[in-house]
Structures are given as structure tokens and as C-alpha cells.
Image (cartoon, rainbow over all chains, first blue to last red; front, top):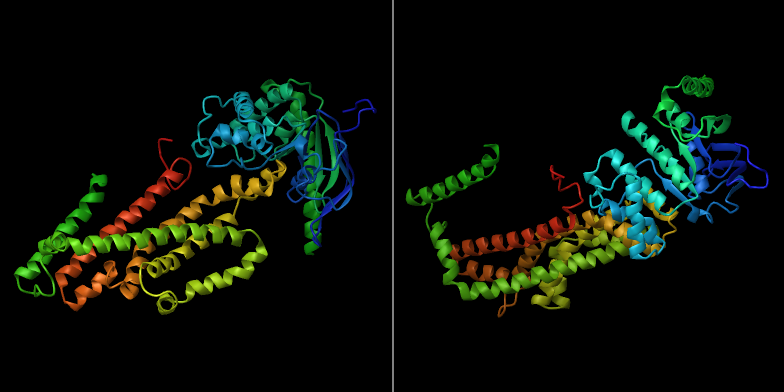
Length: 268
Length: 259
């Protein structure tokens, strides 16, 4: 995605590496700049550090080397502008749907009335208007994830970080949530970083797909996704969609094969 | 039918038991001096009500105050232990040592330091009940879901917000489990304390037990046993009710199928 050079990227990685203590290198020399409004998917074999990239952007984990700026700031200072959607719905089980959606607003000291207003708006947006008084355990996995997304959206974040949010869901629910996510994004305008194992999901959602190699995690290839938004389910039936899925799958396979070969070499 | 069996079987068993009780008396297998008739046990309660009612009040007081102290004190101790890894590793061994010292060894010390009577008995009840609260609550406070902690971190939550809006409510089921155990232990603690340090003028059920034993009044001992059973039952039922109201809406331990 090329934009005019006068607008700085919203997230930029400059020679970023990550290592926990004396452990192995998790990420090595990551170079990437992401513009406002992009939808970036991160895909790669397990252990390639794709979740770690989200942790670095969010400031939940510090970088070891290089520079990482988020909206011109350090990740930690930019936290107010970000929201994290975890792999699990990560809800407070003792709070109702609406109170869960209000969690982040409450931490920010937003007044009770405004909180309730925003929460009901977000609950409508994710299609849960029939269940605001339900407790998490009364909801299906897909509905819980919708609550989690509503909570992230409640703070109108500039950047949303999603760590395999739909990985535990069945395919139909996942497709439906993908479509809804794009619809929400058309209205709420955020930049997204999305970790996934599903190539089709990545192609359907993203402006760009970052394919990572493992041990240590490096950027193997960045693939542009040319399809115009709004994207609907009809896109999934198109030939050019399938062609791109194949292309990304091949890239991913070459990465996995070399990872496999490296493991074999290490054993031998 | 299966549901009815759930209560029918214990009822049948109870009837058989009482039948056997009567049979063993009428057949002369056991002397009534050793095993009084069931109705004599029941009659003894109104007959001796003056002594019983005062003793029940004393023991109930020690149970309730000791229980509240164990629950509140245990919660505060758990908060301190969970506040910081070093505090926990410094203090927890001593909490354990206190717990592992048999209460029977501590009781004479309490008697020497504080004397006999209701205050000491309440202290014994506290000592018996507080550890399960401490152990469970500490476990709850230190096992907060990591993603939820990260969520609060992302929301720039203060330490106080994290504690009151996340860690304490997250530990509630653990705390309430500790409270349930303390609830079953408290009447036993009050009875034991009273048995050993009871006041001869204003004694509780434990002291009354000594009086009855010395008089070899088997019937009265049986009646007293029945009363302590009921007292314990009321106590545990109340605590379970608190547990239910705190958790039934959201916690998996109350799994409504219609939810």
C-alpha cells in the first residue's frame, strides 16, 4: 500500500529483534512499515514469533534491539490508542456482556452514562443486542469473541491487535465473523494486525500478508492483496481469490519445509 | 423415579437405623443405660432447656465470631501474602508452621496467657478456621488469568484497579471455598475450645458435655450431640447460602442447564 511519503507510517519496525533473557532469538531484524488503515495478517509456522510481534507493538513485551514506533511514540506510550483481542475471549466471568464491554472505558474513568451509551452501541455493532444482560458462560464461543471485539472497539482504537481470535471457532462461525469484522472496519476505521493460521482468512481480510519464517522469526515475504473493499462472501468463490490463497500457501509451505529441514539438520 | 431415589434411599436407611435401635433395646441386646431410647433423647432437650439454651448461645457466639474473624482475618492475611512474591516466601512458612502445630498444644498456652472463657474459645475457633481461608484465597489471588492481566495492562490500569476490579473478584470462588471449610470447622473449634477451656459459670456446649459425662448421663450426651449436629448444619447451610448467592449467576460450579 503506497501512500504519500509525507504521511508517516502508523507502525514502523526498524531492525527489531526480540529475545527473552538469554533464550534463543525469537525475532530477528524485522523491517516493516504499516500505514494507517491497513489490515496486516501475520502468518507462519509455529514458533515464528507472530504473536510476539503483537506483544511488541502493544508494549506488553519490550523489544531487544532496533526501533519500533507506534503513531510516533514508543509502544508503551501509545497504549491508549491500541486494543488487544486475545486468542481467548478473556472476559470477566462475573460481569454481564454490557459490563464486560465497559471494562476498558471504566479503567479510563469514563462516566457511567457515557459508558453505558458506548457499550450498547458496540453491542449492536457486533450483533449481540439480544444478550446484553447475559453472563459469558451463557454464550457460545463465537458470541464470546464478539463481546471481546466489542470491548476492543469501545475505546475507538487507532490500532487493533488480534491474536488468532477465531482460531477456536468452527469454520462457518469464523467466516461469518470475518465478514462482520470487515463491515465494522468500514465504519470504525482502524489499522489491524491479525495473527492467524488460516490462509483463506488472511487473504479474505488483509491488505497485506506477512509470511514469517521460524527460528528465529524473520520476514520471508510480504504479499499484497489487491481485492477492493467492501469484500463480501462472494469473494471466496472467485478464481483470483483462490489463486492468491494458493500463492500464499506455497510461500508458507516453502517456509515450513526449510524449517523442517533445519530441524532435521539440527538433529543429525 | 431416579430423582425420587435420591431422597428415598437415605430415608429408608434412616428408618432401618432407628428400627434397629429400637429392636436392640427391646430385645435386650444393649442396656438403656448405654443406649437411651430415641424419644428419651428428644424429651431431654425441653427438659434441660435452661442449661441447653444458655450453652447454645455461648457456643453459637464463639462459632460465629470465630468464623467471622477467620474469614476476615484470613482474607487480609491472604491479601498481604499475595501482594508480593517476597512477602509470600518470607511469611508463608510461618503460617504453615502455625497451622501444623496441633491446636491441642496451643490451647494450654492460650489458657495460660489469656485465661479461660469465651474470648479464648473464640480465639481457638479462629485459629482452626483461618488457614483454609488463607490458603485458598492466596491461591486465588495469585492465579489470575494472564490474558486478563494483560488486558488490564493494555487499559493502563493502576495497581488498585487491578486488585479491586480483577484479582479480588477473580479470587472470590477460591475465597468462598475457604469460607465453606472454615464454616464446617468453626462449630467444631468452638466446641473443642469450650470442652477444654469452658467457663464453669457460663459454659457452652463443650463444658456441658463434661458435666453430663461426669454425671454419666448418656441421654443428655445424646441430646447434646443432636443439638451440636443441628447447630453445625445451620452454620454450614448459611455459609452455603452465601456461596450460592455470590456465585450462582456466573460461576461454573452452578451449571444451570436452562441458561
